[in-house]
Image (cartoon, rainbow, N blue to C red):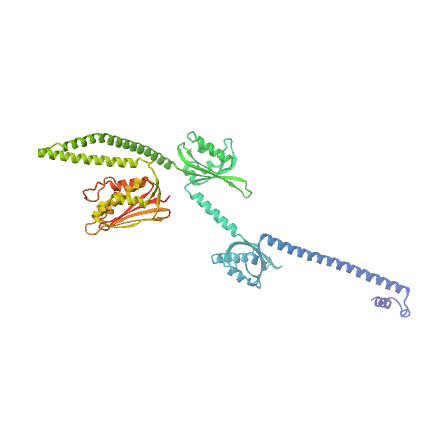
Length: 552
C-alpha cells in the first residue's frame, strides 16, 4: 500500500527522470503512510473491543434476565407460555409440568392443545374474549377459567397475557402467564357459603372487636339481619356501639360478670340471661362469645351468636309450675291413700270380727240370713280391695327396698312349689330354659311375686280347647338379662286394650277370680327394680311377657 501510494504520488508530482530514485521526501511519505495505517488499525481494534464488551455485557444481561425469569417463575409457580401467532407455535415453561402434572412429551406445540384442556363450560366464553381481544389489539388480556390437569381434574387459573407487535404494528406473538388460584377459589366459595349461612340463619350473629370499653365490653363491627329482627337495632345503628346496649336492670348480674370475665381472659363463654330490645322490651337470650385468632395466633375478633329462648323459658316455667302442682297433688293423693287405708282398715277389721262372731250365732230368719251373708261378702271384698291398694302404695312409694344378687332358678323353684297344686290339677306342658344366671340389685320377694303372678295368669287364662303350654326362658343380650313368659292361652286383644294392659283394675276377660290388679303390681315391681316389661298377644293364640333387667 505504501509503495503504491508512493508511485501514485510521484507519477503526478515528479518528473520521469527522478522516478526511479527514492528520495527523502518519498521516505517521509512512506513513513507517514505506515504511521497513519497503524493508527487506523489501532482505532479499529479499540472500536472492536468496545463492541465486543457491549456484546459480552448484553449476553450477560440476557443470562441474568433468564435466571431472574426462571427464579420468578419458580417463586410464583406461574406457567409461562409464548404463542407465535403466525405459525401457531406454542412454547411452555416447566410450570406446565410442575403445576399441572404433564410430562414433557405430553405437552402440545399448538394452540389447539391449550384450548382442548379448557373446561367445556368455560371454553366458549374464554375463546370469545380472547379473539375479541386480538381483534381490538389492546395491549393486555386477562381471563379466569378452569384448566385440565394430566390426571383429568381441573384447576382454577387466572391467565394474563400481552401482545408483541412488529414495526408495522402487526401482532406476531402473545406472551402470558397462568396462575393456579384453585385454593383461593375454594376459599372464596367457602367464605361465600359461610356468609350465606351467617346472613340466612335465624340466630343472631355479631362480630366484635377485641378493644374493650370501661365496662369490659367490646364494640360491634358486624351484625346480620337476624340481629336486626331480634333486637330492633338497625345495622347502621349497631356498628360501633358496645354490647352494653343489650343488657339492663333485669339482666342476671352473675351471668353478665361471668361474660365480662371470659372476654377479658379470651375464653369461650355461654350464658342465658334477660336482654333488652331497642324498644325497651325484655327477652331471654342464649348468648355465646367465641374468640377468633389470626394466622399469628393473636386474638383479632370476637364472634357472638345469640338465640332467642324466650319461648323455651316460658315453657320451662310452665313445666316447673306443672311439676310443682303435680308433686303437690301426688303428695295429697298419697296422704289421702294413707289416711283412707288406715281409717278404713280399723272399722273393716271390726266388721270382719263382728261377722266372725255372727257366724257362730244361729239365724233362723232366712231373709236376715241372706242379708248378713251379702253384707259379709261385701265386707270381705272391700277388705281385699283395701289390702290391694296398700300393696300398690307400698310398691310405688318404697325406693329403699332391699336389693341383692338373686339366682333366677332358685326363685322359680320357690314359685313352682307354691303353685304345685294348680300345676298338678291342670297339668300344663312346661318348657323351662333358664340360664344359670344371677340378677344383681333385685328384690327377691318382688321377683317371686312377678313370677307368681305371670304363672298364675297363664294357668288362669288357659284355653279350654287345647292343652296349656308354658315356656319360660332367659338369655343375655347386650349386657341385659331377658326373661320371657310365653303361653298358648286365650290371649288379649291388644288393638283395644294396648294402653290398658298394666292399668289398675283393668279386666279383659269375664273370669270370676279376675280383679285387674296382678299385671299392675307386676309392672310396678319390675320398674321399681329398674327393669322394663312388654307384652305381645293375639286372641286365641296366646300371650308373651318379656322382662328386661340390667345384668349388673
